[in-house]
Image 1 (cartoon, rainbow, N blue to C red):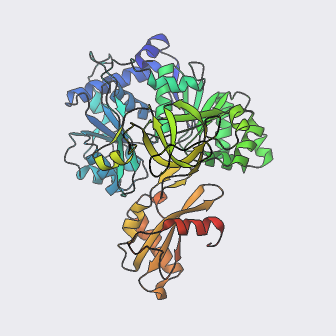
Image 2 (image 1 turned 180 degrees about the horizontal axis):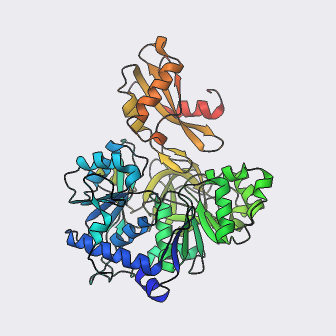
Length: 511
């Protein structure tokens, strides 16, 4: 359960392969490179519990960065490469990062964000092309390839947006355990049948929690990772055939896009090497999952969990076929369904899903949100805010999710950020951002706007508002379309009744 142990046992085995180019790093090379960077970070003054941030696309060096922090007892935050300057600067500053690493494709945002973060002691450029950043090779030059004398386990600290509109860091305690001493990192992977014979395909951005967590676990087990720089449905199938992929993880949107390929394209590729494919991050339509099982066989695993690691349910294909629509039964922690008064509900009755017995976590710098995630009766249970019910066999079904969260293509989007921006536009009197049903993405972002004057309502203003939002926020968080109304449904207290809007679009009353 230690990269160093894997490197000692199989130094020449491929650790990571980039699917598009075939670029490869071996276990021996990855171990040596991450050791050199760990020594460099120590020389820069970083100690246990300090923090680094990285905004890097899917590439081999991503794992060097993550492993250097992991083996140094540091927190590491992978930042989405789709974010804009304000968002990146907020995360760097909020997590109190001392080191920030980026690369040439993100130079403009990286420089502007770093300039706003006086707590940084070192900015690093992987490509030696960002003005004012220290080239990576200069940072690691002269440092040994041997491990630190006092290696302890670090911890990822990723950010998830909140209802306040600002992302929140999900922080779990540094354990102080020696490197390789925390079995939690690989227990989940082994549960899904993953081991050192696995060739694991990761098609999603590595800055997301599941790809990062599973890929790091695969490297502890001695597996070979194959990483796509971006998902493409036919390319996914071609990679499975070419590299004889045994396992991987996707989101339901990827299933949908692959099912939309013509039958001739789908039949073109040999997928017989697949032993198991995991999916999570968003609800999977029952018909979609049945179609994939019919195509690939009963090799699908599904789980429901959050970056908080407060609990997890999961199911294999046989269990899902016996309980269609379930997201699984308890594997980490114990699920409890509570009503609004904190009373536990019987099977079949929907309520808020809480977990007991999972990992400890807090929302960094936000004690109010941390407290709001806990069981009000003080039983030590915590929730992600999702709504669901248990059946008589203990299988969980989700019926709703966080009040305003949008899940588009497996990515969580919180509308408050876009609302805060559009509310400042001089031609907007009121605005609501909601998710509307979409066959491929599950949901897409829509703005429902009360204009300052209905005379302005129309395609030109819609385009202006979308562009206005995109100039200030990551594009995937911005509306794809805008509808106009003379007023929005607000209570006398001023609370916006988004549920009414969402229901209209879900039922087809509004288009």
